[in-house]
Amino acid sequence: MMITVDEALERILSYVDVLEPEEKPLLEALGQVLAEDVTSDFSIPPLDNTAMDGYAVRAEDTAGASQDSPVQLHVTGEVAAGYIFEGEVAAGTAVRIMTGAPVPAGADAIVPFEETDEPFGQAPERAHQVDATVQVFKEAQPGANIRRAGEDVRKGQLVMRKGRVLRASEIGVLSSLGRASAKVIRRPVVAILSTGDELVEAGQPKPPAKIYDANAYGVGALVRRYGGVPRLLGIAKDTVDALTAKIHEGLDADMLVTSAGVSRGDYDMVKEVLAREGEIDFWTVAMKPGKPLAFGCFRKEGRQVPHIGLPGNPVSSMVTFELFGRAALMKMMGKTDWQRPVIKAVAEERIVNRDDPRRFYARCVVTERDGRYYVSLTGPQGSGMLTSMVYANALTVIPAEVDEVQPGEEIDVIMLDWSHGEEWGTASPQEAGP
Ligand code: AMP
Ligand code: MG
Image (cartoon, rainbow, N blue to C red; front, side):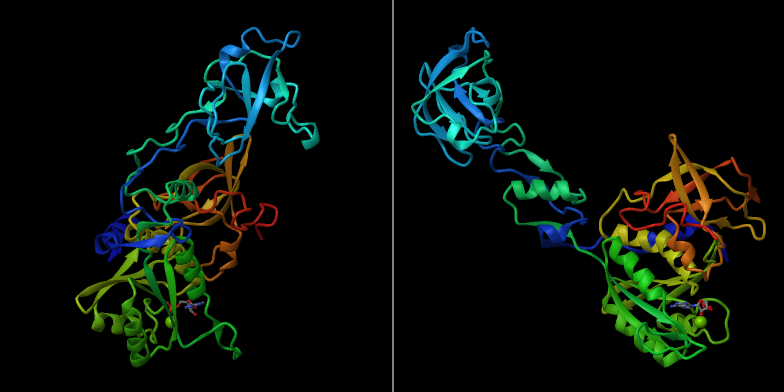
């Protein structure tokens, strides 16, 4: 049965559920979804404090101050961030104060060093000492350079709601609330199994007719990138016993991903074993690359373990995992806003999609020039050619009914990496192509 990408996605998502929460140390929770509302039991900042290095003064004392007729104030003390000045700023006096220090009683403005005769960055021996006189060259308004208690977070405030994804900013906020850990939806463990007599594990000697297993690592890295925990089960030979044993090893995980053995080869036992061990559906998804896809469910000890059977060709397995496996991971992690950005880009070459009416996810390089996006393919698009993925930062979305795209036409592309190659090491456009 031929189904569309959207139908396949909908069915897969109907089988996966949000996982349960766990308490996680903050840094390890990066990218996980908050499973609790976070309120604050104190204010941030806790006290009125200074935003500048300078002098805490009574604003009224500086009335009329100018470069030509400075006001002179008597320096009675000094206060650094983290300390409270015990005295008071009385009329005609000032307290030397450092950024972040609580504003002393009596003071209602901070005069920055730059507006005094003690310029900022002065060598310590030229800084004013306690008991000296400071000259103020500018009038200060009440409240000047003072950060108010609670201006960031008020005591009792709901700071973050559950469902929020913890990025660096959220983790920073949690730590500013004194939290060392957070309650988050746990990461899915994904068991990954490669199948095929032809496969050899990386690091082992390779007989001439064998190939190294690329899928476990390509897919495993995607699992990790999207926040899951990959568990590599290794390689299963194309025999019923080997496959059955390996599949059972994977059923403690939250999801099982196998690759290969779902097409029509004589030696592909995966289909048969899967059908015997659980519920399974074989789909022909109307997409290129990656036509055969299996999806099903195993039951173990009352738990339901969703299973995605990816096509064997390495490009197909990565692209189908990008589209379906990633979505399942996102749902399990409690994410709701996970759709990748789809943008319009101008084709720089002809793209042919005539051979067979399926949606074409060609590997491509998207670049930006003068505010427009341009797209070119990464060269030959054979589904066994994994290097075509290396150069790509996006996938085209050529509808099944479009036979051919002409240079200059605009098409949709799914961005896989936004950073123009730096963050994830994708290619520069010069490097890409045949
Ligand atoms: P199959 O789905 O078993 O017919 O495999 C399709 C193609 O993908 C064959 O050329 C396999 O050799 C290749 N293939 C399957 N699994 C892997 C893998 N883990 N790494 C690299 N190539 C693979
Ligand atoms: Mg095979």
